[in-house]
Amino acid sequence: MYAQMVKSTGKGVQALEDMSPQDRAFQERIDRGEKIEPKDWMPDAYRKNLIRQIGQHAHSEIVGQLPEGNWITRAPTLERKANLLAKVQDEAGHGLYLYCAAETLGVSRDELFEMLHCGKMKYSSIFNYPTLTWADMGAVGWLVDGAAIMNQVPLQRTSYGPYARAMVRICKEESFHQRQGYHIMIKMAKEGTADQKRMAQDAFNRFWYPALMMFGPSDKDSVHSAQSMAWKIKMNTNDELRQKFVDETVPQAKFLSLTVPDERLMFNEETGHYDYSEPDWNEFMDVISGNGPCNTDRLEARKKAWREGSWVREGMMAHADKKAQCKIAAE
Amino acid sequence: MSEQTNHLFEFLLRQGDNALVLGHRTSQWCGVGPALEEDIALANTALDLIGQTQLWLGYAAEVEGNNRSANDLAFLRDAYDFRNILMMEVPNEDFGRTLMRQFMFDTYQVPWLTELQNSSNERVAAIAAKSVKEARYHLERSRETVIALGDGTEESNSRMQNALDYLWPYCGEIFGADEVDHAMSEQGVAPVPSTLKGTWRACVERALSEAFLVIPNSEFAHSGGRTGFRHTEHLGHMLATMQTLQRSYPGAEW
Image 1 (spheres, chains in turn blue, orange):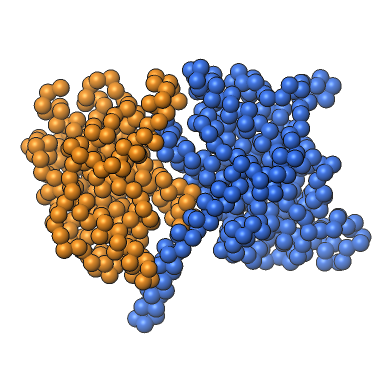
Image 2 (cartoon, one colour):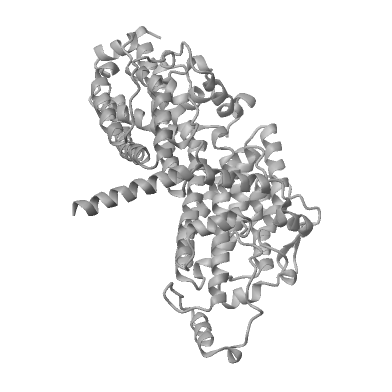
């Protein structure tokens, strides 16, 4: 999931006995592990939360095409070019499934785009960081897709059926992307020239903390999680997932002979986990509120593509309408 | 290299460079297409073309026998060694020009690759057999899109007409008949491209009339791409971008 900071509309989690009979029956279905399907009754707040979360996830996929798309024309070999292009194409595909999943909740893709373009809906802050060298294609695949998988795997069991099913397919592709990214890092950091090693370390330095931020604020500061967890829209806390990510990633970095840019990083024998430094949450808030390195450019790129594509969409629709009318006339 | 080998090498570069340059141009749409479905479809086309590039240039490198790979040919040649037709390298401009170019090319590629399946050269025949399936699908899609947008709205019609007017003088170069073409024909490797002009023209006319688009009344044709004599200014910029890593870090592996 790329949906940190999804604001919950609930006012905190109600106890079962305080719920209306309808709400209670709904919560009990979720507690039994049943899937909620589009035609089922659901509380308005559940619907709204899901639209926000799925919409934000979908937007993240299509905005996420941009930082990697930035290197398609500069990929160093034909194989790398094809792999990267296929990967970025997959992101577009993920966007498509997720917009379709959101549509089952009664919101159209055009409405969601509109909300993205006017700033009413967000996308993951990670895509507001620039991709500066080819090593960033490795770092993004390895770390960003890696963090996304960590978030997304549990969502395959999320309570809303269409979302859970979309996640199954997305997760398969994401884990392929992560391997592809890691392979770029192996070529550069482990087997590469001095220049390539420098590029790899530089990319790692720039993406480490932003990747940690992808899990959202610390649990103690995350006010929106409880209701989403009760509804099984969200399955684990931010800190649990972040710790899991650090524990898995640090040995991978060691294998690559890369240095984690955190002097305090240390394995804690007692807990069996790595202790690590928190990312700079002020930077996170800046990026979320629009002041990341690429916020303006990313959103403008999306708006420009939408604006410049309007004649195509209108032309296609007009043609389809004319054809439909001819068919009616012929019958 | 013997003259015969050299002709085959030139012929293979023409095939490979068309795919490489058009694939590159098409890949520039990834992430900024007019709709998600189009974004995905354009990426598919680009991926097919990159795959074809690997086959054609891979074989070209073998024929050359100079220890070069498909990647060396793609990333370490200068503009005057490229053999794509000029139409492939002109900028995308808008979705209209991109799809019109694709249509013009696909309308040629389908009969061309169909013929190449009967090539006396088994490798050429095999590459053509694989590529023609992709080309048929590309043609189906580019033809439908050109017709839809020509028919669609006043604006989409006028954009498609502009695209056609711009690209028309670049179409003629497809139908060459030079020394390399004749040598290939004599060896049974490939027909002379000019012999396909009639088929191509008939298909183009049919689609464009359905699209309410008017073919410019001119037979003038730019040339210089497939011989490498004089490319457009655009190719140098494209290669500067495409080749940057291989040029900046000689010998590095990626």
